[in-house]
Length: 294
Image (cartoon, rainbow, N blue to C red):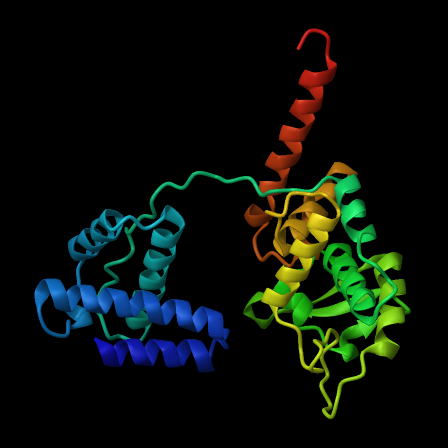
């Protein structure tokens, strides 16, 4: 089975151009399944000998180990992709994962900041220092474009079109899109760019650390925690909270769902529809607070 897993991972890397994070997830998921088969059935398993009942037993085994439903669903999705690949290559005569179902997952609504809280957060960043100018520019860009933090730290200077107030973003699956970021973020970037000074390198990254190299997503998270505390806001918010808030604020002000989908870079509209539930809950809260008969 190890040879077929290697062939599948090579396919993901060379033909589908999967990211390192995606590759690592698939590798871990399939290594766990391979270890399970060796432990339970003994020896390296032949993929052609895997059938639907065996996969269902594996699913039950995962559930018994206490994995979260989201983790369990990801591990099963990796198996479905793996067996689809084997079926297309003629390495198995039938796909045993066709009927493999994910566990039911509770739909968690994303944490949000209100508009006034976002403004308070952004205004808490001092603009008197080099680090402050950088941090204000990156947080304004994060919220102004609704970017993933990985997309933010992946930006290069050449990705900016400040005249049009746009940035070119490389999203999931290496798909590119143009994102408007607004006037305020653009003004902050105009202040930051002349000061970025990559030291002794030709680092193309837009946002640099003190060593003159590209910022990491973890660093952005640490900066955000500092400014959340300074603004007197709950420090449980994350960079992704600003993306959730961006989408909800647009829908609250009349943006249509399809446009928000494009701005977020979601491949499927169903991924964006979570924000409709958030908006509906907010409308119901307002109704129950304001209506005399509620």
